[in-house]
Amino acid sequence: MIKLDIGEVVQQSGVPASTLRFYEERGLITSRGRRGLRRQFDPGVLDRLALIALGRAAGFSLNEIALMFAPEGQLRIDRQMLVAKSEGGCQDFRVQGGLNNHTDGRTNRS
Image 1 (tube, helix red, strand yellow):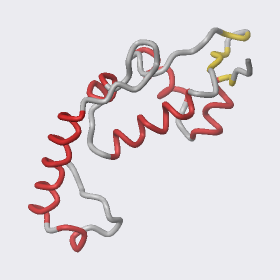
Image 2 (spheres, rainbow, N blue to C red; image 1 turned 90 degrees about the vertical axis):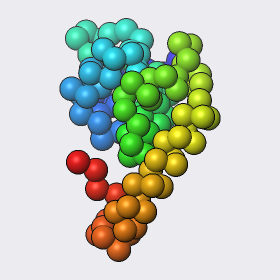
Image 3 (cartoon, one colour; image 1 turned 60 degrees about the vertical axis):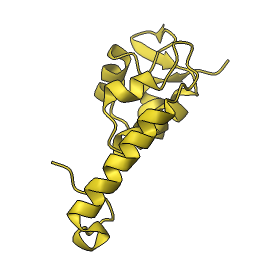
Image 4 (tube, one colour; image 1 turned 90 degrees about the horizontal axis):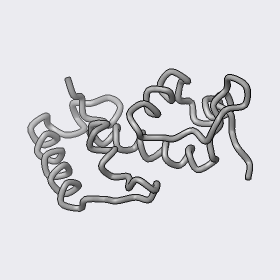
């Protein structure tokens, strides 16, 4: 099976190596070994990083995102949590006045 070293993951995902190491410490991603001093990852890590980025953009904490992944790597989505988060996000959006107050189309969160 083809493995990507940490440099290739950085290049393909745009996620800094320090963030990859942090995500690995938090259990969000898993390396599959090392070649010399460089961590090796399965190509599926790119999909997982995209899901993490999507979750962060939607306002989920890393702890909430971690709960969405089963130990064997499969997704385990809590629909009630998604609904609660989306309802809260919609409320935040209405309170802030919608897109008219935002230049990039995203809600600003402090």
